[in-house]
Amino acid sequence: MSNKEEGKRTDAIQWVAPRPEDYDRIKKGDMPGDVIQIQEGHIAKANVIFPKLFQLVTAILDARPNDRAVISVHGGSGVGKSEVGALLAYYFNDLGIGSYILSGDNYPHRIPKHNDQERLRIFREKGLKGFVAQGAYNKERSEQLRELQGLNLDFDPDQIKAYPWLFIYQQEGRKGLEDYLGTAAEIDFEEISNIIARFKGGKDNILLKRMGREETEIWYEKVDFTDVKVMVIEWTHGNNRALTGVDIPILLNSTPSETLEHRRLRNRDGGTDSPFTTLVLDIEQNLLFSQASGAKIIVLKDGEIVNYEQYCQIMLQEGL
Image (cartoon, rainbow, N blue to C red; front, top):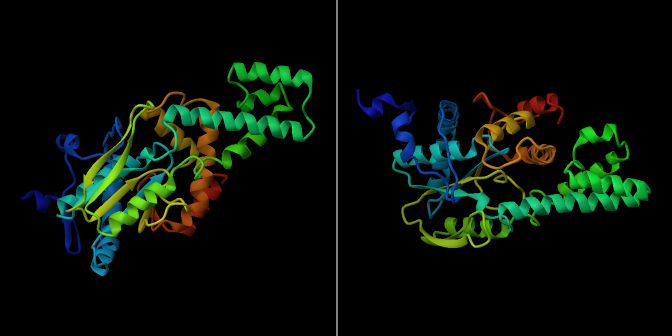
């Protein structure tokens, strides 16, 4: 039996799922230093998504003079966007449809460590201002708050038991973060939207940003899109309303607890167990939920595709 005969089949398309020995040659996104770890669960999700995605993409390619489409694989941090996005691109390439994987994590305004610092600065600034505005501030609490900040405990909800007034500070700090996370203040949506527009407009050579972990690790590389028909954007914010030009947003859903566990296992960044990271993930999850109606395909953790109404029922059961 040939490799093609061993592959998946749906209507007129046929593709071959990679074997473990093939994983290392699967192209990943263009985020410097990023690591993908293909597992059977990622392959199972990609195999469920691809038949429907192929139909949507081919309809777009047939209708457009420049024959190009943009899809996004989005969802909570650590849910498998990089791996599933890489597999979908691999399948398109296997069928002779050139694809490129763009990592949205190259497009925040600040490198990761500085963005983490900015998030914490905003939380503390807005928390303190709100604390004062509500008349809860006094000298004793100010000293206690500075002590908690020095121990990085001011954002820990467990501290409210000992310091009930801390609830106001944390509530106001959260509001400040909600006004920052996933907005144009944090991310350069305009630049990535312009890249999408140039790609769909038929440009064959586009300068794309690369962002490492240090200030000196930001540069641009010219990418040749001559034979590329499909751009796959793998990014938490791939369905954000500030992003324009995405044809097919694909939501890989996970609950906040599942997302935190994914991050812990992947261990891409430090502090995955911190209360502050949990707070950020919770805000991120609410943002994804608020924008999910725009997703063309929604996939649960177990690989099941659901419609928007089913998704809402599931997430409401999770308390969102």
